[in-house]
Image: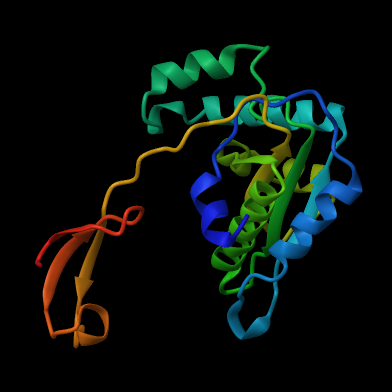
Amino acid sequence: MDVLEAIQTRRAVRDYTGDRLTEADLRPLIAAASWAPSALNGQSWQFTVITDRDLLKRISDESKAWTLKTIADLPRPDHFRDLFRDPTFDIFYHAPALVVISAARASQWATEECALAAQNLMLAAAEKGLGTCWIGFAREWLNTAPGLEALGLAADSLVVAPIVVGHPRTTIPPVPRKPAFVNWIGDRRGLYGKEQAGTEQAAPENGSRAGNP
């Protein structure tokens, strides 16, 4: 699988088999994440891997309770209120592993660098046939004092990307993408053989484009 195929086949997986992952499964994903770009090559990220089912359940329960406090600020609040009140709902979808990417809060580019590392990790997982999902609902509680303590992180840490990893139960078909909105500024002769200017809608998958010819 090449990188473009990994980009196009990666999906947010929310249904996992019961198969566990080993350290040998997860280490290559973290290695790939560590090759992400970072400001001044600071590599500020830190990776916390959780496979303990009791801790995963605790984080899920605490995160649901925390989110219910601010449910009115979410889209479709009634839907999420019912979901998070359900004691059987696991925000990690019973995935066997959670990789939390964090950095020191004082790092100027902590969010950007951790997000870039997260994308590398998810693409590497896709290449190996594993599923991932960035669980945004876990982030708020994990950034509280009890949450950071549960992860064994310093009090000045910032959790950016909680990502579950596991074996997908089913194959998720391609999801359509909107044409990319592109505003070209400058000489485009290197692209289309003659100079053109303006704005176009470019379809990323089949190479066709709409808008200016």
